[in-house]
Image (tube, rainbow, N blue to C red; front, side, top):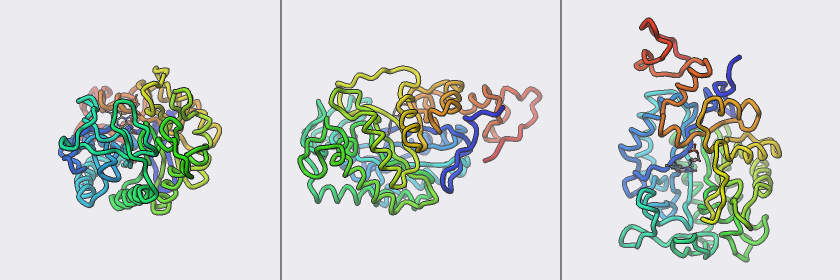
Amino acid sequence: MSSKLFSPFKANGVTLRNRIVVSPMGQYSGDGEGNATDWHLMHLGNLSISGAGLVITEAAAVEPQGRVSPIDLGIWSDDNAEALARVLDFCRRQSDCKWGIQIAHGGRKGGVSPAWEGQLPLAEEDGGWTPVSASGLAYPGRADPIALDDAGLARVRNAFVAAALRARDLGLDVLEVHNAHGYLLHSFLTPLANNRNDAYGGDLEGRMRFPLDVFRAVREVWPQDRVLGVRISATDWAEGGWTIEDSIVFTQRLKSMGCDYITASSGGSTPEQVIPIGPSYQIPLAEAIRRETGIAVMGVGLITEPAQAEQILSEGQADLVALGRRMLFNPRWPWHAAVELNEPLAIPRQYQRCHPGMQRGDFLKPRQG
Ligand SMILES: Cc1cc2nc3c(=O)[nH]c(=O)nc-3n(C[C@H](O)[C@H](O)[C@H](O)COP(=O)(O)O)c2cc1C
């Protein structure tokens, strides 16, 4: 019997050759102006031949103060788009996997040093900035943000639209709006970061309003024959925070507005979060959202083994599996999974002879698709 993991996934006009997705992973390797560099050429080039059906590039900021660190990737300028086009052109010459991009605004978590320098707040002279957020509540240990006023809300919404148009023109197959991990859009959703008393705060309806406004505006410009998804933190894992029940309501609204899939991540709003870390720890969240809303769901979080990924899909807990750290540790994970599940490999012809089944030195016929 053929595996679910290596079965195609079709949404609108996009068909992925399998259900393995490379999860977006920030590289802190931009040039300081939001432009992709040679690191991205190597990093994404490498992942382009990984055998995954879809690679989603790291969070790309929709405006300069939407970065988390000053060397994050951006998609706010024509230069940013050109730098990404160079990387994508290169990658597309190496493989036929599909490409997605995540568009993001770091909100109150922005203006800090890169991960490997501890994500510490940076003074303006060191490249930092005053972050913006849903309200003036700071993320513990980071700078006090400025609450977005009406003009600021319009600016950010327009920045998401401009980013979507650039992504469209880059020919990307999948667009993912980053609504997770305590960044700007999530900071509107969660009571832990949103204490506004206008139409964009208060009850669930008010807190969902700005993220839904942004989604609606992006939906209007993103082509119907491609794929548009949203990554959410399905729970804050904290007292008084955003919950899985809220996520189900939010997903129902997104679905009715034309959202094609949800990625069920979690956390990021508060250092007080208590996360039950372990294999597949976020999959019950994915499963609940899929069951209650019927939307396609991408499961993510400590999926490391082919049999584990296969089980998640075959038991109907998710439609796609995204792998992050495992793909950095072993960028050939999909090849290993194919061998383990007895599936043909999407392997570049230059590397065919590394296949463990190549006893006699002859050449395999890789599955295209
Ligand atoms: C180095 C690194 C960078 C990340 N950057 C992003 C990002 O840009 N956007 C995002 O939504 N998640 C980001 N994540 C989270 C991953 O996409 C993924 O959800 C998380 O690591 C859990 O999956 P895993 O256990 O397979 O790594 C990042 C994770 C890592 C390890």
